[in-house]
Image (cartoon, rainbow, N blue to C red):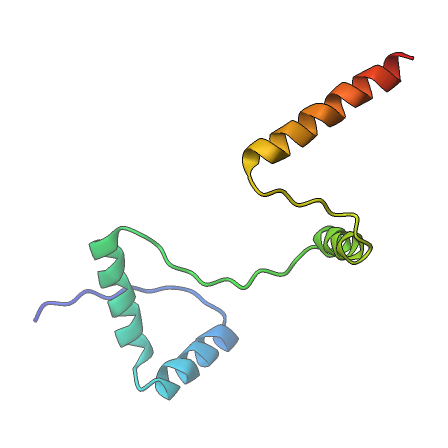
Length: 100
């Protein structure tokens, strides 16, 4: 079988950690890289699972939203028409009060 070598540069810590995970799963690191490349060719897509960490801004907004919900400052609607009617009334009311 004809094969080619791919050389990549990676820090030793990452390589050792990846080898350990591969070994724990019962694979060699080389076999996992080969499988990934075959999947890349077949699907023409890249799959990475990167855990997202919420920003401090998002955490602040979520806390404010939670406080609004607990304080009863949240309005719910049965359907879009009801929501639209509410917003139109708010806009009309705001237009009347800001011109006075």
